[in-house]
Length: 81
Image (cartoon, rainbow, N blue to C red; front, side, top):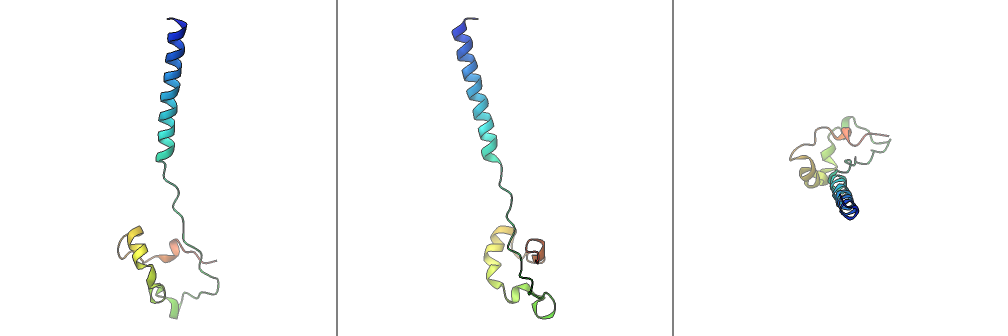
């Protein structure tokens, strides 16, 4: 094999490998962010047992993100301090 052919083949193979690796890096999904922690003074008993009684504004954004009506376990993402 001629020297020029070898160099051209090596450059093409390196370019294809770089494109393949770059495509794999771009497809990775970022880790899902968790919500902010609830303040320490936020009581979860009695009055505050139903999160949606005060935080009803979250319905539209949470419907899009987690599916409609999926509000049963708020503390899985919003852990208390």
